[in-house]
Every structure is written in C-alpha cells, then in structure tokens.
Length: 297
Image 1 (cartoon, rainbow, N blue to C red):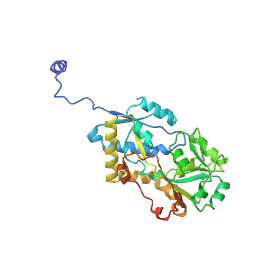
Image 2 (cartoon, rainbow, N blue to C red):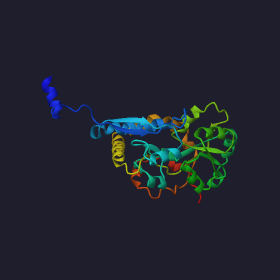
Image 3 (cartoon, rainbow, N blue to C red):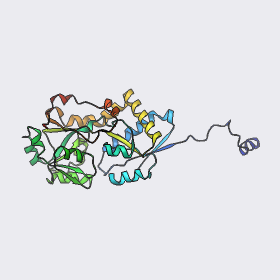
Image 4 (cartoon, rainbow, N blue to C red):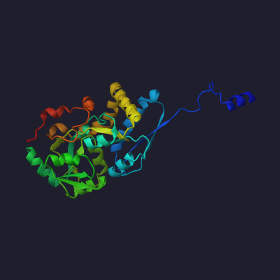
C-alpha cells in the first residue's frame, strides 16, 4: 500500500487504467405537450446514431431541454445555452444559414406527404375537390413558427396561425379554419391522443406533397457533434436499423391514411434552394406517387 501511494503521489499512474472515460452530453428537445408523441421517433433515432458511433467517439449522455416553443428554442440554441443540442425540425434556407445541421432527412422525408384533420362539415365539401384551384380555397391551420406556413402561402393557401400546438386541434374541431395539415407519419397517434374531440376527424379524400426535409440542428460551428451524428445515421441506414425504427414508429400511421385512395396534389418548396442536396438519396418515395393529381400553375 505504501508503494502504491508513493507512485500515485509522484504522478506516475501510466500503468493503471483510466478511472473513467470521457462522456459527451447531447441535448434533445422535449415534447411540446403531454400528448405530443412526435419526439418519440426522433429522440430514439438520435440515441441510435449515438450508439452506432459509441466505439469510435466514446460514451454519451442524452438529456432533454425544458419544454419551450420554437422561437425560444432557437434563441436558446443560438446563445449556446445547451450542450451539443440536436433539435429536429423541418429545414429551410434561413435555418441552415444560422445553425449547423446534419444533412440527413431524419424521417426519410415522409412528413412531406400531408393529410388533414378537419370537421365532418368540411369533409363533405372536400369530396368535391377535382383540381388544385378547388383545394386552395380551403384555409389551413398551422402553429406560429412552423416552416410550412410560407410554403403554403406561396402556393396560394390562406393560413391561420395558432400560438400553441394543442390549440390547433380544438380550433379545427370548431371550424376556425378548414384543414389542419399533418404528416402521414404522425396523424394516427395525434388522432388517438385527441379522440375526445368529437368534431375532429381525418379528412378522407385528399393529400398534399411538398419537399420537407427534417434535419437535426445544433449550435453554429458544432462540427464534432454534426460529424458524429451524421456518421451514426448513415451507419444505421446502411445496416437497416434506421428503417426498422422508422417502420415501428410510422408504418401503422402510413397505412391508416389509405394514401392510395386519395387525390394527391404537389406544390413546390421554394425555401430549400441553398441546401446541399446530399440528403435526397435517403428520401422515401411513396409508391402511390404515380397516381397523383398534378397542380396547375
């Protein structure tokens, strides 16, 4: 014991194993409400990417930021409040210029395929939609700050903005606007979570598509975190574990909307012109795209 103490005091501990490996902390975004399950997949995906890179990059710890709206989230991220934040959201040129991001579509682009919550009264009217000029007459509800808003307005839709995620479901059921646009991958869980709203239904006739890549965003210049998560996502995609996770979370919802029975319209997204296009090779293509109804410009 005396000899060991002498060696330790002398600082010569090279022959002893390290007491603890360095642990890197990553911060994920918390759900926006108690019933919000949209973060389940993206946070599981982030953990999968970190696991895939554990051997090369070392151990990690995943924590969650406090619940906050997007405006406050981005302000906090820009100010460096969080340690290695990885917040998943739809990309646009402005966000990609202000923050560093992982150029990989976290949901494989499936959220760009849209269907709608509506009321029974509006659902009867949408059955008569034959062309895009018919569809654009219906107003669409979205949350303040969502990147969908300028895309929809650019296409000619009237968009009604709500301050909170949960309020959109109630507003839809009360006919404050006609349609509440949702990704086909998320609408089933949302319908279940809001089944108490008797006047809220899933619109039965229509679908909309626009390119809407979703990326993990982090603090500007956070190169190491971006590199690690990029490597992890690509590794998970290559070995099939990403697709397995994707199917577990999204397949039921995709089947739920009966996509092939809907009239599909496409609009452009003019706000992703400056994003490097590497992500496009990972996008999922719905087989039903061949049956779409083109918009008229």
